[in-house]
Length: 351
Ligand code: AMP
Ligand code: MG
Image 1 (cartoon, helix red, strand yellow):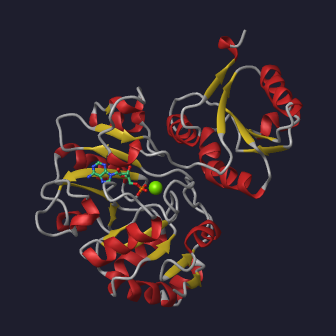
Image 2: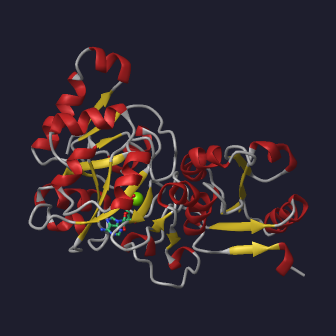
């Protein structure tokens, strides 16, 4: 398949009445799949009402069929097209955070969405993205758009159109290139079908942000104990992994340097994910800075780009520094733990 590629500068595109976005929307209306930018990561969009389009998304990504898709809408009112009801807590969260990086789980409208989109569940995940190109595209299509991250399953999510191209060129109808994404990690997923909102996946909107609006919020048990069965089907899969194995290192910079040295003495090429503050403290085969430790949102922004960059090097092993699991740090550590398959090395256990 020949993949179309549209480079879109939002300001110019808007002033002309979105000509390229409309071309991309025509493919969506035709039940073809198209990648587009959002404020979190690039999404791979398809008509959420079409079984044919939904299956194309799963096929292009190589995504397991039991992992449901998030439905993207371009206005708050559109939620009524796909959700059976909007509970009070959900309403408050929509008003506070939409458009934005918060996905809400609702009881779904029966007989409306393609079965594959919700993977047979009686709930649906919905989000209104905060990106002008995404909103213009969904509106031009006039449809709810199912869109998982636009990567091959198991790879880090794409934060630039080039990443989408590397993973999916030839497998999808088109790519709308709207530049780099902002948040850098996927949306927070919160289940609002029960009494208290439950966070199933941490993201840019933090537990503290949600509590401030709804009064209470819980974390799914699987976010605290990785042996537990997650309520969100997708959370059980290994994700975000670069080609070389990743290990999470918890300890002082001196100890981390020692671990690097030990590996290199064994003839291994070692990559290190660190932050700008510590860049000059380490010596390894490849040392990549990932944002600033003092502002974890910058770490989230750069995380997938840095994980992908290691694939362009010949390192045998990747060591990563770790971060406090607070605020957006919870999302960063959740993604890093998955990239590492929960492999940790800790100074306090190393004697
Ligand atoms: P992605 O689109 O690749 O960011 O993945 C979407 C995430 O939302 C996955 O972790 C899914 O398991 C989760 N998700 C989608 N729909 C539902 C649902 N109805 N209930 C719970 N989790 C969902
Ligand atoms: Mg994904």
